[in-house]
Image (cartoon, rainbow, N blue to C red; front, side, top):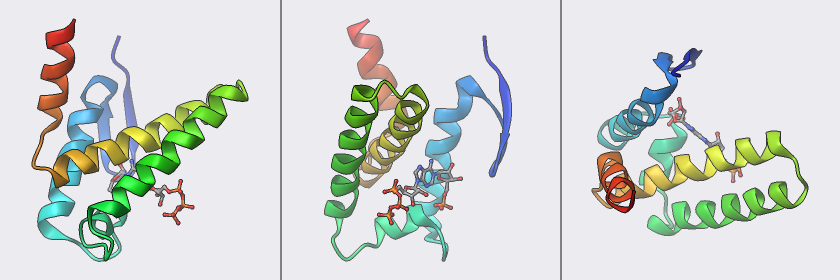
Length: 107
Ligand SMILES: N=c1c2ncn([C@@H]3O[C@H](COP(=O)(O)OP(=O)(O)OP(=O)(O)O)[C@@H](O)[C@H]3O)c2ncn1[C@@H]1O[C@H](COP(=O)(O)O)[C@@H](O)[C@H]1O
């Protein structure tokens, strides 16, 4: 069942949120607006290493939350991890559709 929620970027169904988030990431990549955290990952002096480091951090924080049996924190850290993975996809000219296709092929 899909639920509709309002976030900072508008209202979106739960099952559409990955695509909406990825479209936002692509928009930040193209426009590089000032004040955008996503844009800062595309222009970082460390290059791709900036997002790779964040993925490492968020993966560690996800593991620690699981070890603590803290399901709320686990959900939040997993969301941070997925967001940074999607930024990495955009940096490598991949699309969220590529991830869907890979998962579907294994199903
Ligand atoms: N989903 C996310 C998202 N998840 C995590 N983050 C950012 O990722 C960072 C995570 O870092 P940490 O948890 O280490 O927190 P921190 O202490 O701020 O870390 P540092 O950045 O200081 O190292 C934070 O700055 C979060 O704000 C995100 N930033 C943006 N998005 C989405 O991207 C959209 C566009 O955001 P902007 O690019 O900022 O316009 C937003 O509307 C959201 O939908």
